[in-house]
Image (cartoon, rainbow, N blue to C red):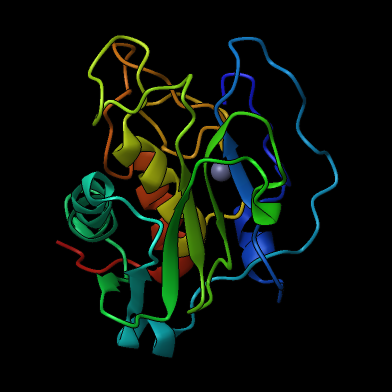
Length: 221
Ligand SMILES: [Zn+2]
């Protein structure tokens, strides 16, 4: 991002959600400060929204052995507490719950060669398997792009900001929205500290509205 490649951008959410798809590959690339590539104008069907019965059951996930200790608390916070906050996500969305042996997997890597992440140089997070119990989220450590959790300096990346975006993909957002950080976490490019929005951890107003279109309103009050 910042030089991001937003694969499969441009499909309307409702249209995409009605397609039966196979795999979401949404790379959140955080690379150089110079945009390196444009958005693909020809998205393919690659994901789906969660069914009512799946939403009722919830989605379980687990860390794989690659996930370092420092990453677990912020990821669990964003996938569970922040994602499910009724004040920012008042929809009948899928809930994520970490369970030993959970169906979905969170992974961590130091390398770029993750096929599902399109091998985009500089990526920091990506997701696959949108709307399916076996989804997967990867977080990457790039030595040139510090995580704020490890080094709170200007220019660092907040891992929860990256993760809420990936959770958005897994939860049903199959595309990006190229608008304000105050509207959505699904921007193709997030921002670094101290720019506005760098530490956003919850869905924003357009995200909530889209979730409600997909899954209905949870509470009308
Ligand atoms: Zn994305």
